[in-house]
Structure formats: structure tokens, C-alpha cells
Length: 178
Image 1 (cartoon, helix red, strand yellow):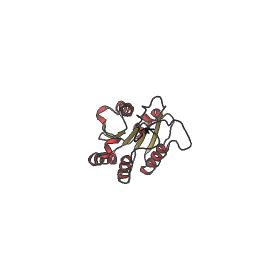
Image 2 (cartoon, helix red, strand yellow; image 1 turned 135 degrees about the horizontal axis):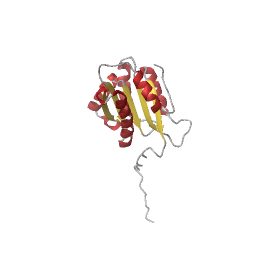
Image 3 (tube, helix red, strand yellow; image 1 turned 45 degrees about the vertical axis):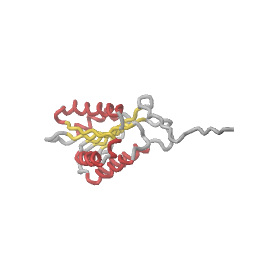
Image 4 (cartoon, one colour; image 1 turned 90 degrees about the horizontal axis):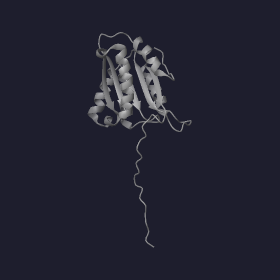
């Protein structure tokens, strides 16, 4: 299957899903998400796939990026990604993710069964955009190419993405007594 990069990938989702070889088993979908909003965004994609194929024909596993730090969770996520027909990555940022995400990719990628499949990237739009914006999108494009998977990318505008809380570490005001 040819790789796809579409400004409106949701419209391409139906063509992609119906173009996959028919299976006597459920379509396996692995979802990696960042927070509750990105989980909901991925849920929209999952529901569309269920609507196209039927709820009994889709089997999903859901993994929070933060939980990949735990070895048991990482092992489970790797195992399901190896056998997945579709992998959905839904995250707020578009510049990078925590290191365990990259361990996860590097663990399943060389062992993935060849054949049809899709990598769906749901990314928060970078603000402000600059020449270096979209590093995660570029990385996922390379992953899809190496795995011989179709790639669908959708980005949400900044107002739709949940802002990350600002954490101030080690900032203390020093007061001198005169």
C-alpha cells in the first residue's frame, strides 16, 4: 500500500480500513495517548473504525504514554503493537515525547509482521510554527516507512489542544538582609 500524508486524513480513514485485507479475526488496534483529551480524540478514530467494520470486528488496547515507564506496561504495549493492524498515536505535542515512547517504538518496529497496516498520528499543532516544528511527525513518517505502514496524520489547532501545566522547579527568590 502506498504511504499517505493527507491534510484531512479522517476522510482517508475509510478507504484505508476497507482496503486492508479481510480478516477472519478482529482488527487489532493499539492506541497510545497522552492525556484524557487525546484519549478522546483517539476514541473518535476508534469509533469510526468500529462503525466501518462492526464493533465485534475491532479489538483495541489502550496505553498511556506516561505508563510506558513501567516495564510490565511497556512489554504489553510492545507485544500488542507487533500484532496490530492499526497503531494510533494521539499526543498533545508535535515536537517529541518521553523516552519510554521511543523505547516502545524501537522494541516493536523490528519485530512487526510485514503486511498491510496503518499508523495514525493525531498531534497537537505546534505554536508558534518554525523551521524545526513537527519533529515528531517526521519521526513517525520514518517509522511508518520502515514498518511498511500507511501513515495518516491529523493536527489539531492550539486552541483545541490541552495546554500542559507549567512547572517551576528550583526558582526561589533570594532575599538579602541589608
